Image 1 (cartoon, helix red, strand yellow):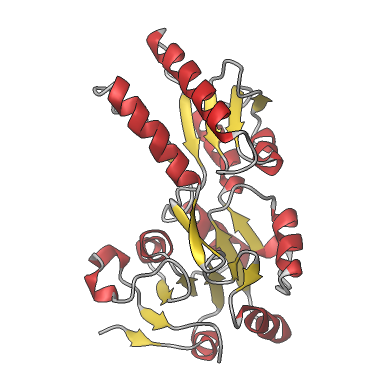
Image 2 (cartoon, helix red, strand yellow):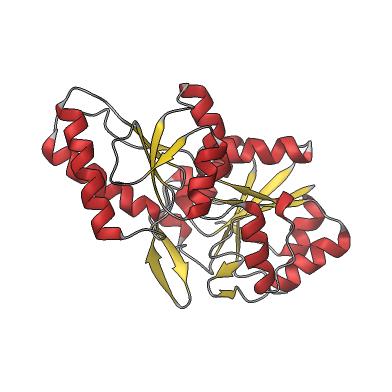
Length: 278
């Protein structure tokens, strides 16, 4: 039986609070009930906290501005995004300077430029395909053109790099849900598998949670691993926290299913919390 907890109990128990964004703090175009008050309380206590978001559509400064429109007073230096992980990925693969098609927003393209990539039009030949977001581009025209050019490259014996900063498939939006950039990548991978069934290497490198890089950056900034992750998605927020050895809290305000006992052990939270409201 997973025990329940409250934000006050977490503040007393852990040195650092880590939040997921969508479903925990925001359900665009509004804030999750209790989230503005929770952030104000942490700010007044000078309690260390960070927002770990799989988003790659907005720079931290852009996202901080959007948060303030929701009465969430979160500074940009407290926001760690999946987009910011591109620099390390490009460095690890030595692909800085490569021609990159970016499906996403202008901020998505800026993340790629900051990583050293040369951003080109979706109509151009490319070495790297980055899916930064599901919005910000003419979806049907761009995906069809990029898929065609990708097939041509593979037919010529080339292997493009496929990069997905945000592996989320769905996200909470208002009272419902929307498809995220991970769904776009799955669409590409399904098409690639149909045409090249033996090419298991033609898949996207997924950078965001549950992978450890974002958590490790939070530990680096805070100087401690005494942290707890509050999230709404078992397969990213909770699994990622479990993998790096910190406590996890599953909130019921976003993607989470009602009964965590039905989850695989890797995705089971340390605690449950109904909301951030007292």
